[in-house]
Structures are given as structure tokens and as C-alpha cells.
Length: 408
Image (cartoon, rainbow, N blue to C red; front, side, top):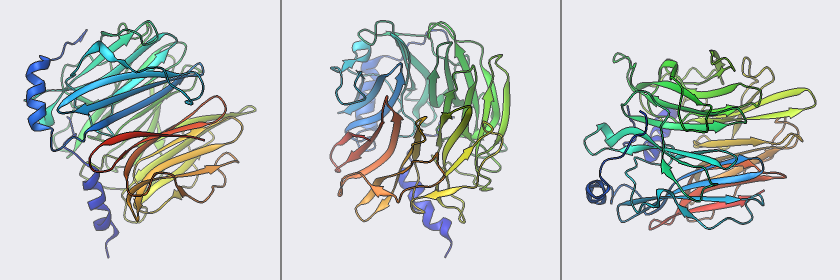
């Protein structure tokens, strides 16, 4: 039997119509969009938490959630100074009861932080747009999340944007995303990967760099700052549709590095499957850890790899979980611990599994399910805290989608 035929229904189950092809951008009128969203999204968008992102800055965790209730989207910010054991009271971003947002899990709103300055970004919902996707919007707080204002968004091209990721270090904030400004119509299901940097805390953004003019059109991207002036970008390429990694150096020069796993997956569609990266430093050695998803019939599922030359060459891949594994994240501490988390099918439906390594990814524990039986759980995240790890995911009982957290 063709394994890819088994895998495609799993892909379709995870997909929505989320494939999307400055200065300060204001959204369309909220009242107008709210009424249309209530009609168009009631049967397609779950009630409850529909978007999650989390970052760590100077031992403080910053959490962004988006809640969907009766056609309205509200954005909420919280912070934790005790590794996620407790959280501040939620603050409604922009104090808005509805924000026009084109959001699904895998195309989540994003957050980054530099001290008391915090920036969030998301894709605007546009009723007449293709897949209802519009330009990126941004909001900014300079008082540690107490108050928020609309802000300049990273793109300098005013078309539809999506699949955003952001990062920050002491020098700058960084953003990557997909848009179709340089799309090649001859290549199906393709967009291009773009990047920008802000050196004034998200007040303004530099001219965009096109990192790859031909990429997958609907897989999330990952950007990681190494603390030495370099930002690494992981994205799904085309021809083949394997994940690729490259680096923007301190002089804002882009260098493509390699595929992360040479699976040679040729796929013309939109898999909505990305991957993630994390750095680990032990003595003078820096190891780059990665988890990637693929639908190649001979390599189905989620795979772990590492690189000891910051992305130029990669280890042999280690499969994590079953062939139905899809969306994954990874985090590593400098004491050698590594945790990977992913979703896959179980007896009770889509569930969250986790595995860990105590020796820098050389050997791995057996996978174990951590989500509740009877709940549909997906799109897990994991982040290192001061002494441990924190994993987050959304799970649904068919009526309400909620956020679940696990401290490790």
C-alpha cells in the first residue's frame, strides 16, 4: 500500500484555507469585519484558544494567546517570572473586543520581547482577499505589556502575508514571513521567504531581504538569534519540499546553508508542516538541534537531527514517534538536556507526545503521551525556562479549544 496515500488524509485533516499568498497599518473597520466573520468563520474556526506563541527574554516568559468567541477574536498578553508556574493577569491587547485576524494553528500570531518592549504581529483578515488573507499587522507595548498601540509591521510590500515568526536579542528584533511579491506562477503552491530587522524595538523596520524567492506557500517558518549577531532561518523549500536552513549575519548578508534532512520529498501541495531549531552550548562547542516533518513515503513523520557546524552539515535523522507525527518543536539546555514534543495519532485521536535526551541528542527516551485521552490535541510548543522546560498545546473536546501547559 502507498504510505503517502495514508498520510495525505492526515495532512488534509490539519489544513484549513490558510494558504496566503507600511508604515503603521490600520485594519479595516472592526464592526464590518466582525459581522462577516461571525457568519463565515462560525463553522470553521473553533471556539476558544486558536493561537499560541511564547518567548523567553531575560528569564521572563511572554505568552500571547488569541481567543475566538462567537465570531470575535481577542488577543491576550501574559507574563511569568517563575518559569510558568504562575502568570500575570491577562491584558487585552489594544483593548479591542475584535481584531480582524486570519489565524489558525500553524499560522499563529507571534510575539517577541526586548526588556519592557514587546511586539506582536499577525495576518489581517480581509474579506475579499484570497483565502481572506491580508497584510501583516503589528502592535507594540513599551511598558511591559500594560498598554498597547498599533505599530509598524515588518513588511515593506503591502500584499497578503503569513506564517510569521519573530525573535530578538540585545541588538535587534527579527521577523520572517511568507508573501508572494516574487512568486513564480510556474511553480505550484509556492511563495517566497522574506526577512526584516528592527534596531529600535519595533518602532520601525529595515528594508526587506528576500531570502528565498521560491518556497512552500503555507508552512510555518522559524527564526532563531544565536546571540552573536546571526539569525538562523528554517523554512520549507520547494523542489524538493524539504526544510532548508540559512543564516543572516550581522552585516545583514544571507547565506543558504543546507537542507535539514535529505529526504528529497517532491510535493506540489501545501502540507502546513514546519519544524523548529534550538541552540545548545557546552564548553566551547555549539550544537544546533532541529526537528522537521516530512511526508515522503519512505520517511513519514517527525525527525530529529543535529549540526555541529551551525547548519552546514547535519547528522543522520532519528525518527521521533509514529509515521503519523506531524507538528513538532524542540528545546535544549546547556547542560545537555534536549526535549522534543510533537502531535501524532493515538487510540483517542490526535495527541501530544514527548521524548527527551540527556546527552545532547545522541540517545532518546521512548515517546510518551502527555495530552489527555479523549481530547484532540495538536501543535505543541516547548521552550526552555531557567531550570527546566515548558510545553504548551491546544486541545479540544469538540465544543471548546483550550490551552494546556506542562512544566518539565
